[in-house]
Length: 319
Image (cartoon, rainbow, N blue to C red; front, side):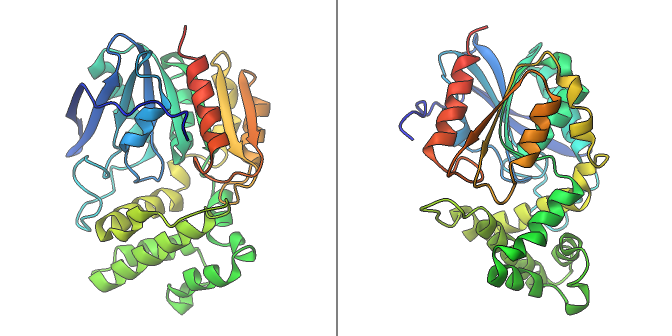
């Protein structure tokens, strides 16, 4: 990935009180007078690590990153089982984005998101299209109930042994029902051993269904028990509620994005999130360009996907 931009350090950062007892960590880096760009990380629950900064030319962009509620450096931490997720929904995150935009004095910005970050980006842009100048989205997902069922059950046809382990980690009586609900219940169990087993097995399965590209290595973040619990709690919370959106709403309302230039980048070998969602979105969003990358999977799993994201941010850096 030699085309990545140099890693730059934030020139400003802080904790923004967004209400409900939540404070979200934000940072800005690059050029203070540059084109504003917002990063929406994946997961939910991954946090906005330094790598995201390298997708933008720091001389051209004022890059804004923030850790969504409950994760990264935001507080309270969803890794603490006592942290309530009642006020952690897509609608709360959209409000947080708007509060951060106003806090930073930004009128509109390019929005970049990957995986879950695409779902959040679409929900935000469809709610506030006047605040979005362009969009760069990779590993396109919309977190519908059908997509959740695909990841948690249907992919057992592709990874039968690994999926059987994932299924068998839940109580026998719950194995034929919603596995995401079963895991969410285990992650809320008063017994820490039950929570730890659920977090470990959930993250093990996450590593499996994104492993279709050559040279895949297990995600080292899953070695951290706090990260495992934080990530598993937030993913199951959002997935069991289908992102707190009307099912299919993001594709239905995609015409609201008319006039916003966008690039949709997706790997043809993305088993975790098949390309049909990206294709359907492109049919409904007249200003979007669909870029399908042969041989690559979910996330920035290879050079070609990364290069396509870099090309898109470079193209939009002027104007």
